Length: 316
View (tube, rainbow, N blue to C red):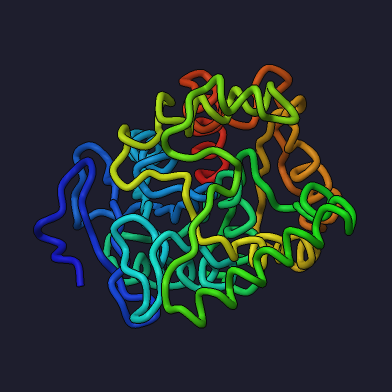
């Protein structure tokens, strides 16, 4: 359990239980933090395949600066958090991400200075938060930025595309089960050593590849070598998990006040707009022509727009 007396303004390393092991997180606290006061808290959910020092390491300080308690953490098998015994690192599995999030909410609920808990997800984190919120009403409000909530149309591109992906993921899972060894690959075709020229020249959609590399590449702002544990390598059976878009299927069951922020010209915009169409809770929507998907990860002007909007929404 967290020793309340050791907490201070800024970033604090914390751990909490999930699946019987200690997940590692950073708890960002506002300036002048006083454990005897009450604060609104946010559980953060990160993009695939990120660790807590990437997007959450950007949003945590921003939300703390706006007066919130913010928890960013490494999911089971990612970053500083362990894998389960006999399993492998660099493995994000959709159903476990949801349960890890529920446990993160439980952890925040043990902190005496937390009076309300909300959820904030970016990219895949949007789907995680939306999915977790369906039956976790301890989260009073949720916000998704550049979220991948309605990912079916984005990922299920026809059997000629998805069948080989699923076949490869199935083979990888079988191989890992039989050998007990991890089977790693680069899910976006971007490994941790690739140059920008190599990655972009091989991409089907160069503009998206360029902004992806600007963030995730070895020379990117939050790529390998820039952030502890950051890597673009992942367990190769991930497609069996990522192709299941839980939040989209249950959008009409979400009752919490909801905010969706996205870039209208981002290739991932339909993952927000199609989700919004399925919501029945009168969501608030902020759409920006000038920002791309990845801009909301780190570009100061985009991050300011999204964090200001989230703060205002959660404070209503």
